[in-house]
Every structure is written in C-alpha cells, then in structure tokens.
Image (tube, rainbow, N blue to C red; front, side, top):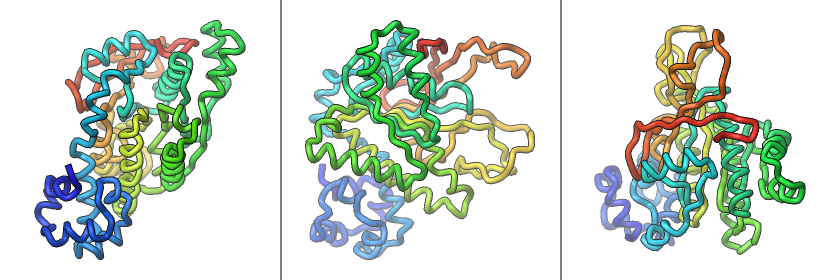
Length: 340
C-alpha cells in the first residue's frame, strides 16, 4: 500500500490532508512510510501547512497501523528463533508470539526484579543456539561481562565456545535518546552497505529504554520526548522490517497521582504514599509500539517484602499482545545459569 493511502488510514491525516497536500509529498521525494518518518517534523510542517503537533500525531498513528510487508509475513513462519528457555517458548507458542525475526518485545518490571537477567539469558541463548550476533545496547553503563561468563561456566561450556559466545554479544553504551537513535541509524546503514557483522546481527537488546529519557520528565518535556520516541519507534520498525528482533527493557513503578505525571514519567520524589503498581514508563504511545509487552513480576505468593527470602521465582505476565491473547502468565526461575 502506498504512502498516501496509509496516511488516509490515520484519523489525523484523513481529517487534515487533501489530495493536493498528499501529492506534495511525492513531489518532494517522500514516497514511502520510512521516507515520511525520516523527514524532519519542521519540513513536513511547512510542506503540508499543518501544525508540528499534527505531524507528530500522524507519525504516531502510522506506527499503530499494520506495518509488516506481505513478503515478510509469508516467510515469518520459517524464521522462528526461540528463546532457549523451554517453559517460555511453550508459553509464547500458546499466545501466538514465538520469538522470531521482526518481533519487538518490551520487558517491563520494577527495579531489581530480574529484567536484566532475563535479557542476558535471551542474548546468551541466541548467540549460543543460533551462532549469530546480538547488539546489546547498554544505557545504564552496567553491563556485566562476569555475569555472562558465570552463566557459561554454570552451563559447563568449553572455553572455545564460551569465548565465541562472548565475542558475539556486541555491547554499545549510550547515555541519551539521541545517541540511541544514532546507533540504530548506523546499524541500519551497515545493513544497507552489506557489512557482514551487521547482517549477522539478528537481535537487538536495549537495557533499558527508560534510562535514555531520564532528562525528559514531566508535562513540559512531553513534546520533546514524544518526538524522540517517534524517531526511536521509526528506527526500530525499519530494522524490524529488515528481519531484526528487538527486546527492550522498561521500568515499571508504583504510580502516585500527586507526584507522577500521567505520561508515565515520574515528576517528583517518592514519599511512601499509597501507589498503584505496575505502570510502565514512557506513556501510552510507546505501549503501542511493541508487538508483545511482558511484565516480569514477583509471584503474589512470594511478594512479602523484606520478611521473606527471594527464591528466584518470577511470573511473566502478558500485558499487550499484537498477535494473540493478553493476561496469561507463566513462571520462570532465576538460576546461576540464567532464567529457566
């Protein structure tokens, strides 16, 4: 489907844009969905004679439309990866969301629940099982090589295999959303240029996306944040169409309406007030980007604060699912070898 028809499927585009305005896009070499996303907001504002806010809204609505090409969908069944976690793979099959090319997953959870351990396990299992590469984007500057080595030792992997697995997890540190966008742009360009290392990288892990937006708190920064989130979403979707799978970490927190904005970014300090649990950061728009949104949580039976020991048991809860049901759960265990 061409760009004009796609835009006319969005509520804002259908309401604001005429055939003449849409034809201006083609005249200015903006002919595809990716061209439109890549175009600067100010340029589109001037070209289409609509507000910048309307441009951002159209981009958001386009992101919510079905985006996979027919050719990609036809070959999807041949491109399953599997997570290497037996119980999780069975669970994902039951909800029509196996780990495969082009899937964009979000893993939410409160600090310390084990999100990073899950992402380490997924990254290690992928390079070990599929002999391909993983791009691990570390936004917290705390990637633990030792943790990966300990997991390999616990699995009794020989030294050669261990060294190969370590080398195939390519870690890049980023501090801001702008740096993250540049890393994704560079990766996409490397794929275009047929750089072999990029072509062999089929999974991108981001730990964690919320850390890139720590400076964009509150209502006053919402417009800037949404613009950057739109750009991140565009880059992720573009790479997903090219067959790259994403696992993106995000923080969940207990919301207090007095000191937390409704966009999912905390504005104030924590005062111990009564809060509602499990609200992921980055707001309602970002929640629509991923094909699967998982929450990693302590099972209710063990959620007893400091009065009981952590037995490593974790519940995976399906928050949203593009291809199947939501609300289902399964149990995993944190071990020295990773999550099982």
